[in-house]
Amino acid sequence: MSEIEIHAVPFDAPVAQRLIRAALADLGARYGGSGDETPVDPAEFVPPAGAFLVAHIDGVAVGCGGWRSHGEGGDTAELKRMYTAPEARGRGVARAVLAAVEESARAHGRKRMILECGDRQPEAIAMYGSAGYERIPNFGYYKDEPGCISFGRTL
Image (cartoon, rainbow, N blue to C red; front, side, top):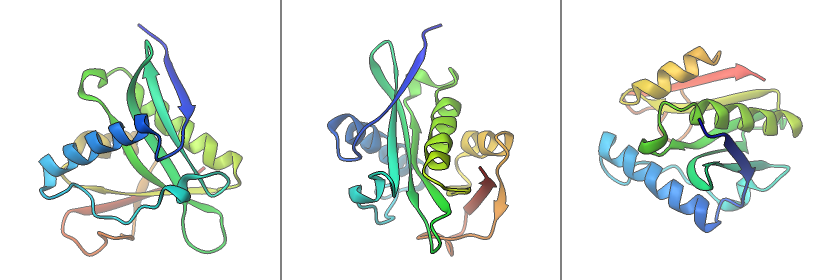
C-alpha cells in the first residue's frame, strides 16, 4: 500500500480548489443544490487562524480538509471541506487528513474541534464517532436545517 503524504497548501491553490469542487459536487449529489452554501473566505485558512491540507498517494491529490478559527476566545477550530476522492476511499485517507488537521489546529493553540455534517453522510458520521467526536448543539449556517448534525471533541 502506498504512503499517504499530507501537506499544507493555500485554500485557493488550484489543487485545493479542484478537491473542494469535487467535495461540493459530492454534497450536491447527496443534498441537492451547490452542496454547501456556508460562507468561506480563503483568508480564514491562513495560519495562525486556520490551515488547509491536501493528501496525496503516489503524487496524486486524493483528499483534503482544513480548519478555521471559530467563535470568540480563539481556542476552537471548525473543520471544513473534508473530502476523499472515491478512488481513494477505504485506504485511510480521511482518518489521516483528520489527524493532520487536528494536529495543525492543536499546534496553533486550539483546544477543541467542531464540525457540522449532514445525515446523508453515514460514512463521515461513523468516522467522526470512531475518532472520538460527540454530538453537540447544532451551529453554523445549517444549524436549523433538518438533517444537520454537529460534532465536537477536545483536542
